[in-house]
Length: 184
Image 1 (cartoon, rainbow, N blue to C red):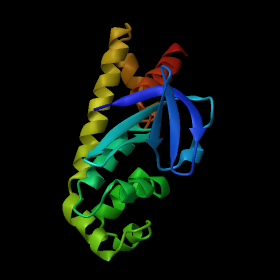
Image 2: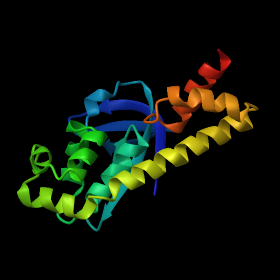
Image 3: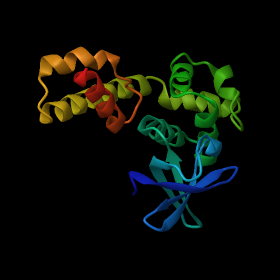
């Protein structure tokens, strides 16, 4: 339901943070709450989990983390509380690489992930993540190009700075990086 929330972190606990948005404090479960700083503003890409006895918000600093989280919880036998620590401990690239290479030992190093769940992750996701990741980066690059063109920059100038921009950052940060490079 919520795509992202932008607010100030007011509280940090062992498994969640409280993000104040327009006077409302949202309890957001995150992989590594201690990577946040109290009284700092953040944009968190969110996933709202709803069951008959629970409504929870899960938050991620990067959209790609949320997207991988959504793919992981689609795996039979892998819920939110098992997928979240995977993103806290492992990197996006490391997890995707382990799935594509069928590296069961890497997947089993995560809490509560045994042999059966690791094999199910590979079975359900192998071959689906790399293609999606490539499509996302192409879409992000096109979005960045469109934004910079709208600001009046020429396509040939934009193409010169594209290789120097971090593709893992949110689009807002990529635009800032591009503008700094274009102004030089």
